[in-house]
Image (cartoon, rainbow over the protein chains, first blue to last red):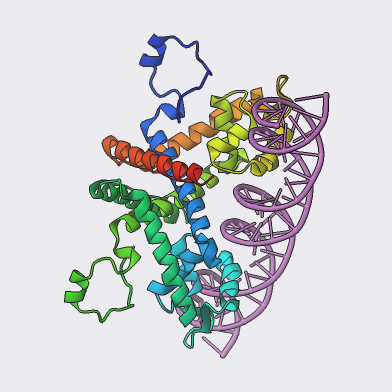
Amino acid sequence: MFNDEHHFAAMNKKQATIEHHHFPWDHPRFRSWIAVARACQLMQQTLTRALADLDIKPPHLDILINLYRFEGISQQELARKLLVGRSNMSMLLPQLEKRGLIERRGDEKDKRVLRLSLTKSGRELTEQAMEIQTTLIEKSLDNEPIEECLIVAQSMERLIARLLKEETDLD
Amino acid sequence: MFNDEHHFAAMNKKQATIEHHHFPWDHPRFRSWIAVARACQLMQQTLTRALADLDIKPPHLDILINLYRFEGISQQELARKLLVGRSNMSMLLPQLEKRGLIERRGDEKDKRVLRLSLTKSGRELTEQAMEIQTTLIEKSLDNEPIEECLIVAQSMERLIARLLKEETDLD
DNA sequence: AAAATGATGTTCATCATTGAACATTCAAAG
DNA sequence: CTTTGAATGTTCAATGATGAACATCATTTT
């Protein structure tokens, strides 16, 4: 994946070994991250095809799974968990509601917030979709030792915490 | 990040320990993958803000970096490297061309293909943008030991190879 | 040579996502 | 109590990404 560049092919060996990290792709962390990003992209595309039969897409599944775990969550909280904007939820949730997969009920104490929950058919669809996603992930990662998966998970969670902290520090 | 679910809170301890992996979020690989996906999303958003001054977005940078490394690449090859559709390139490249960042010249041997290259200002902008991206990645990952970065990279590259193979097997 | 197959790039309709502007409602400060 | 500020959800225009249908050009088959 990182071969066949002919740019600067004439650079002599001495320079190439002495002058480290002149290009991004010479940085190990950079290359790691590019791999992560590409893997995510591919997984997303694969999942999209795997979910096609259920007529939902990854963003919808993200929503459904969170409603499955956190019944009565608000749109705002949902958006925060998914790291997307509120407006996005305002666009997607009415679709799911019209399909009879979710319900939106106004909170009694606070008339601003809408509390979300799955309907019966929504819960059933979610279970099917989660089964598909879990199978895909297991199938894709079953060659990776479990310890390495944990290392990856920990790295990513530290990264998430770090980026989120940076973000809130700016506000 | 995986606490506070009140769903099935009444499940007794025996069941919880004996019945493994009834829910996706109990699967270690599933949780790993969710973390990877969220981290990617956050990185993308952070990079978007970091690039705002240069008036380009991550997809443009992906293109520019590849043109920087692989001068004279075709649109098709570029789309393959970026794991996107050809139509996507047909939409984005004319924008970059109008901004004077890239050039598209028809191949002489094969009149179908357009060969892509950076202009002088395109190369300068790319270097600035790569500096920004590299700095962001280094800054975000400098707490992660280099060995763990390599483990992550290898895991991801195996995953990419695997998913790509699955894909071509279907055609 | 002619025809069929394949590869490359474009166009188009569709959809997810975003940020800004807005309305409503709540909470805090005066 | 009133005003001020913040939180929640909606609308809108703009953008990136996709797949299907199409047009060119190349390659292979017949």
